[in-house]
Length: 272
Image (tube, helix red, strand yellow):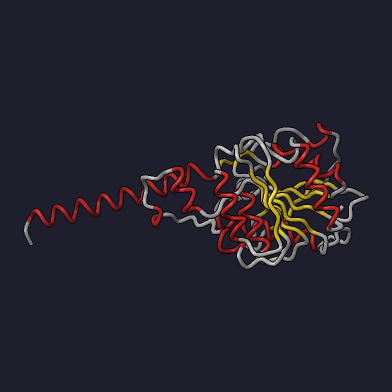
């Protein structure tokens, strides 16, 4: 074999290995941003809670907060985004609680006081563990469970809805899959090197649970067309709710019109 061909093959192999390593590194640093330190306590917003520990199917010890609302017919499982931890979501928790819902928020493995390290497969198991914990409680009506996920939490609750029953699935500012987001964030990288899938768009096609998709045209992290694409792929029944604001400051909690529509949907289904 000519030396030039050998050199070309070696260079090509090194280039592929380098691209593979770069993709893995970018996945590691751009997906999970856990914070081990819990910030504000729920008492800061006037809420009492139970500090709960439970285990995932693969035996990882996880931490969650349960806010029992004595007048609530339903409980919302809150899967948060990829940064910080559950203590950063207190105002949204209070919003749900004040609507008349019990709220269970949990930290993924590696976040807050939850043990382990975050991974795609792991956060799916964490959500299943959270659901199964609620199912073990006699004071929770498992037939009236709302699954709510924001950003990467939307990926988590879509997967959870494929494995557990729910009365309503709410997906806010979330993605279709890792491949689409890779094209947006790193268009120069070959997406077939990705180990992460986050394949919500295929999972949601088969889900018969009622669904509400929420997204803002102003979202600078997950473009509006991504949210629309996910909604369009979803099986009926489904609704779409447009909000305003950026990825981190746009929410039903700060958009009165959107909040009113959200309340209407919950009331129509007898969930509040």
